[in-house]
Amino acid sequence: MATQAFDVVVVGTGPGGYVSAIRCAQLGLSVATVEDDRPGGVCLNWGCIPTKALLRNAEVVGLFQRAQEFGIAVGEWKADYAQAVQRSRRVADRMAKGVEFLFRKNKITLFPGRGTLKSARVVEVAGKDGTQTLEARRAVILATGSEPRSLPGVTIDEKRIISSTGAVTNENRPGSLVVIGAGAVGIEFADVYAAYGASVTVLEALPRVLPVEDEEVGALIARLFSRRGLTIRTGVRVKSVTPGPSSVAVAVEAEGKTETLETDQVLMAVGRAARTRGLGLEPLSVATEKGFVTVSATMETSVKGLYAIGDMAGHQMLAHKAMAEGVVAAEAIAGQSPRPVDYGNVPSCTYCRPQVASIGVSEAVARGGGREIAVGKFPFTASGKAVALGDTEGFVKVVADKSTGEILGVHIVGPEATELIHEFAVGRTLEATLEEIVHTIHAHPTLSEAALEATLAALGHPIHI
Image 1 (spheres, rainbow, N blue to C red):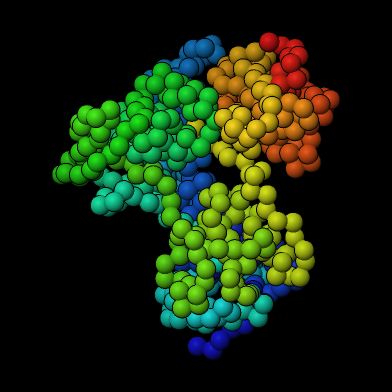
Image 2: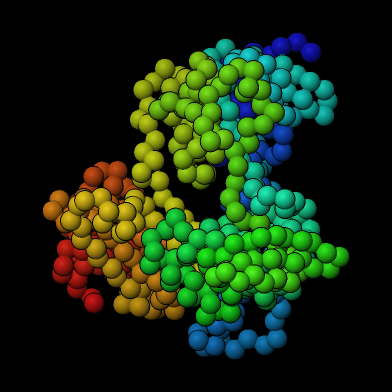
């Protein structure tokens, strides 16, 4: 087939890819996108979005279990996991159609198939109907995302040993589940499965769950999950995972002792690896480091005219980070001077119950930086709105420079933590100090008052504790 030319060709339509394509189109560039799955990528179809739908179902199940607290008498009821999965697929389908609509609205051409670089400006697309060649007059943007990792020698079959993909598609809830890895993915699915009655054991090699979060955060989540009946084991090394006809044997070592756990299913949640294989990077000598593509502040690779964004470009492997990088790449290609992504101000969010969100550095990191710091903490048990909601587990913790009031880090566990964190994200972008936060009137009663109170506590004069 004849070569088709566009100003920009975007390979991959996950959060980074589709956002960069739309921004390019807004800036007057003609855009082609290449996708070997569905528009929206892993996040929308198999990750972020369907997972949050399942977590919402788990939250509703939890509310039914607590109905008497709210004066509601509930008769016999049943939580159907298969229907929860089906609902999550409908949510993902709706959002994928939304991306397709945005492509049509912005006159972006979608080419289904797998894209391979033939040069820095030429992409070959292998699809069901044959091969097509796309030429990029200005640039190619690579946004192929990432894929689940596994332990050495352990094969993910999405039946006995599943990844997050299997977890959002399998309609049969196992009686027991071992989750290997207590990062955001592992903790979120542990929450979902436990809500639907599975016996869940979480294994983490590091000393605490959610190891990238502040130490107090991980400790509280482990305590609350244990209270709900989940088994949380940290400092555990998984030696082998052996699937059998009806179960999986997980051999673990802890404190010098080895034992074998028998479970119906294993969820592998040990991280993700950038999808760079088979893209044609090696013949072009595209620079990489530790499995990630090396990029400039404008997301350009070592090869002129070739850009990389999202999980494959390193830093936080988060959808919202990828979106920000997509905008930077698009504006740079269009000849503008975009503001680089501030990787020190990217919110981290875990959507378990209670939710976890953070930005900036932990208290331990701040104390190790040579500054004198101030720490303010406010529990949701003292929040009128949280008490009214019946959702009081958790706290807001603010870490700041004591002399300047600079906000170094914020850590939230509790109701709507993933929404509350953005007050501090904006504050840090605007270089707001503790004083400026406390001089901002917060509506009462709201959960956001906890942010105000934690800031007051960092200044040494909290009102409501």
